[in-house]
Image 1 (tube, one colour):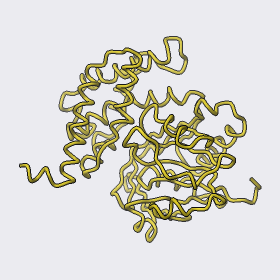
Image 2 (image 1 turned 90 degrees about the vertical axis):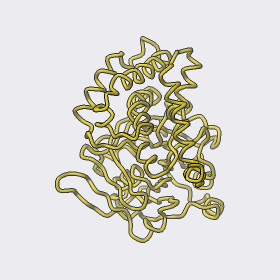
Image 3 (image 1 turned 60 degrees about the vertical axis):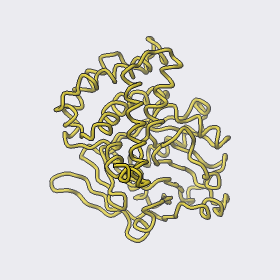
Image 4 (image 1 turned 180 degrees about the horizontal axis):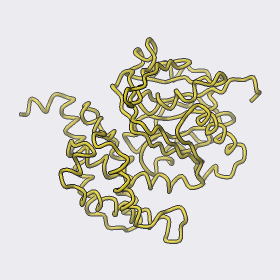
Length: 344
């Protein structure tokens, strides 16, 4: 890539996380961010995104991507591979066990690095299988954010923090490490709170699961925000869920691993939640439930249960939670098809 060539980024998914992150990149004159959007395509295309940082008073900015294209069959099929992107950042919900399909025309092995900004654990293999030869990185994104489903993205003070790393298949390849480092530097120079690189992104994903697999999941079942879960006396259940997740990861990484923390991490995370997470914060899965959207069960809890079975770790609480989550999605499906109202 010549120094005069723009750095071209495709953001797949125009939710809160994707739009907030894109705004950090698109502030550079040599970066062009194209947003691939579905239901909110028209709103983002015509008006841009309104990003609100919930300080007192709120800080409000309007972000207009370099280009917005609509996610449909015509777009996916007709895009010219000669215009392949340097980075393809996938920031959609991960609703199944499979990779997001139809993106092959946006990338080439020689030029493109895919980065997964999705939740969950062990989500990389489907992408390696679906897009063979395309280098893959994975990222853990921490941000307290929400979206109105159209163009407004809100973020609590504290900003966005990203940990990214190449998958094992591509670890150690100097050119790809440089490419990922370039993205890190663009993000930091664009004002993101933190962006760091990890040599063991799997462990970083499991560490995030200690919160996502507990507070996020229980909130979506109980229809309670973070503070309400604790006020309702559910701290004991949350701790048990965290402990079971920790035990699975401990079995995977081993007691000698420098990348996996001790069991005291459960106490640390509960204390951190009390001091750093706003009591009124609504986890992303509960946001989805309240909008009538199905939640990311398989990437978060399904893969966790399957890892426990593989590692022969007993997780009775998580098994029960998994069944309840499937019931929540079933209820949402019934509501969407109007069968729920007719059956009452």
